Length: 298
Image (cartoon, rainbow, N blue to C red; front, side):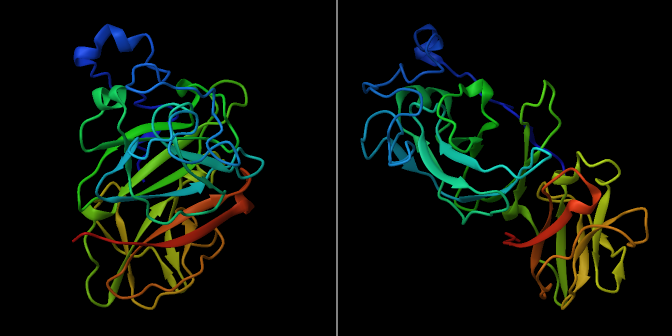
C-alpha cells in the first residue's frame, strides 16, 4: 500500500491571509490567539499531563469543535527492537493541542470524531473542513512540531471514513524514530460481490526487514488469489471466497511457502478487510499479520 506521509510531511500549508507577518513569528506557539496561554510544553491538562480541552491552555469548551466523518489509527510502529506506544493529539502544538489517547503498540483505535481547533491561528491555516492531528512518542511533552512523528491535516465530509496505519521507517539521522503513515480511504472502497471477500494489504511494518517486504495475501489452501484494481489508496484487493480462513502475508516469490504468522479471523461474504503486517523486531521470523474489518462506502 502506498505511503502517503512520512515523518513531518505537510506540517504547515501556510495560508496566512490577514494574519500574515503577525502570526508567522509565532506559528509554532499558541501566540496568535484570542485567548491567553498559560501552559508550558505539554501543560497539565489531565492527571498524566495530557488531557482535557487543550493540554496547556484555556479550558474553554469550544476550543475544539467536531467535524463530520470518522477516522481511526492503527499503531504498528517498531523501532527495530520493540514496539513503540504513541500519543495522539488534535491540533498543531503540544501547548495548545487536545490530547486524544495513547495508542499502544499493536492497537487499533475505535473510530474517532475529527476535531478542529477554533483558535484564530488554526482558522487561518486550515480550511473549514480540515482537522490537524499529530503523534509523538508516548510521554513526550517537549517536542516542537518539526520533531513530531506524524503531523498532518485531513479534510472530512459526512461520508469520510479513514483508517491510518502507522509503521516504522528508515532512520535518516542516527537512531531517531521515523514513522510512516498510510491512509486507507474506506468510503471510496467498493463492496465485495456475493460469495467473495476483498482483502487489502498494509505491510509497511516489514519495509525495514531485508527480503521481507514483498508480500501478498494467502490463505489456507489458497496461493496467489485473483485481484481487483487498486482503489481508495489501499492498493489492489485480493479476492477470496467467503469462508476462507488462515489468512497471512506470504512472501511473493516463494509460492506461499514462507511468510507471516496466520491472522485470526474468517473472510465473510461481501466484507472487506485490511491485512496488516506487524513485526516487533526487524527480523523475518518476527513477522505477524493482523486482520481488521473495513467499511466500504460503495
